[in-house]
Length: 243
Image (cartoon, rainbow, N blue to C red; front, top):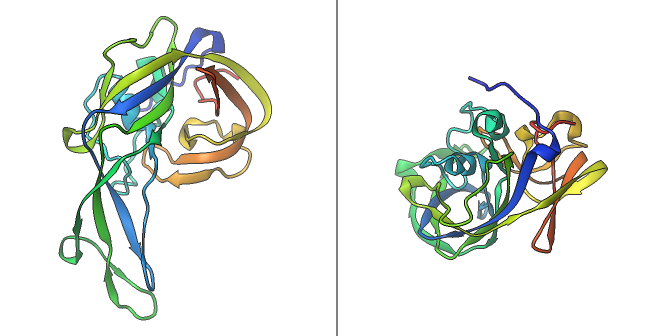
């Protein structure tokens, strides 16, 4: 059931820049597509804000790092939960990454792709990987009023198989202002959380997902300038913030 979309003024909200460090192995899988003479594998340096938001709400999330499975599953966009949870997070962008490769599964337990014209069966290999401890990522978190983030002992668990424990190593309260006019955005955002009228052209989508596609870049008609720790982020405005 979709929550009612209440809207809030900018001065009712608090903004934080949060840096997280991975404390344990975090499993994920990435799809390897066969081509004529090579295989192309895709790994995205971003974690979707749907599992991130659920973990900030205190849930233990069994969610993939990048996912193709259940692409057509239907859930509400993360920003739709704000009226209930009073918290929102943009996708987590990995800024320092350590990968570990685990093993490779082949045709008998996976899908088969038939190439056009030749109709030759070619296995689609699924390569299982892990993000290793020491990996760091940054996100922007929005809370309502007095709902503040804890400055100490903030741990999130959002990896599949009950792995993926992240610890907040830095939480900075940010200064925020509204920018009106065409603005380029070059950090991850959820297209489903952004009002359509704010999108100026097609954003660059890097991750298809049932809780909203994640774009790495695009242009918007309005944006938030979020500054903390000497760094400034330009972010699209989620639809729970009043125009």
